[in-house]
Image (cartoon, rainbow, N blue to C red; front, side, top):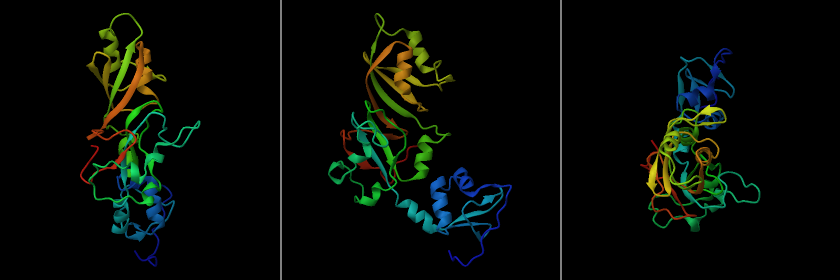
Length: 258
């Protein structure tokens, strides 16, 4: 776009442009601000400016150059081992992103991408796994994927295999299993319905559509179960599969979470 074009007229009663673009699924808030600053966004045919507010009927156009930049952003699937935190380093434990190195890329990753140090820039976890949990962790540069997986309106399933031990005598009562499926509250909030069933005699399969802090461990504790091991094996349509612990691969071009 030519920077000599007039700027769009602000509207004090409207919604912030970057927020409106996010609601329309055009970009994340950060991406929207970057694109506006780069001159890649027009409102009603005029150049947008940072902080601008728009009315719902405003016509928003995004320059193809922004789409090309977005298409270059990568999403990485990591099999997080125990002892790594999902986000920034804390209490002496290293971040999971420190495992994203060329020599830790899964040999069976046949994707066309070649590793580049730039793939680590703005790479952030889209969801978390506790330090003592393992399995599929998504790290992405793409704000659209982050919003899809952890946004307020996210409805993407996450599947876990959880090894447990019942603190009572005998086997976990059926009514307690029913509570795990629906009926428990955490932090004063009723949890969404889950799918919880026995995978084998000491392992439960959890399928959740929300992700409160240490949710599964806290749910289990409420019904008298101790969690001995927790592994996330699926997020939406993307499975952990045979990806070895501590190794990673790129999200395939045709893979979608939902």
